[in-house]
Length: 83
View 1 (tube, helix red, strand yellow):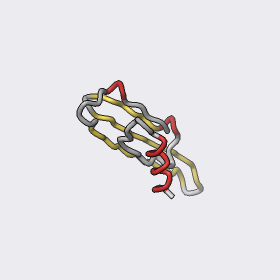
View 2 (cartoon, one colour; view 1 turned 120 degrees about the vertical axis):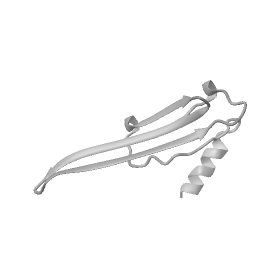
View 3 (cartoon, one colour; view 1 turned 45 degrees about the vertical axis):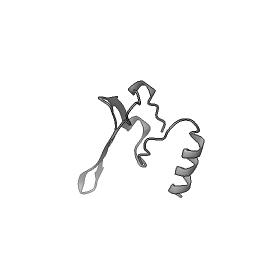
View 4 (cartoon, one colour; view 1 turned 60 degrees about the vertical axis):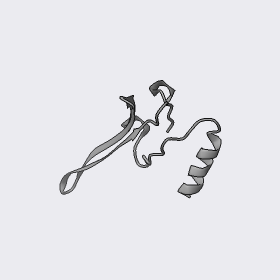
């Protein structure tokens, strides 16, 4: 379950603090962008696909954006992330 995975991640982070978990299921890793700027971590993901069917072209577009403020005292260069 998602909660068990979250607990494992929290437990394995030891001396690192987990700031956020963002669900990017359904997005390819190259479609996910993480930027750290102005005291905030911004996670965005965008997926676009086009396919031709008997009725014509179909488009599928999804995107998410999450912005998380860094806690006081945390420097931007301390931020790490993994997919």
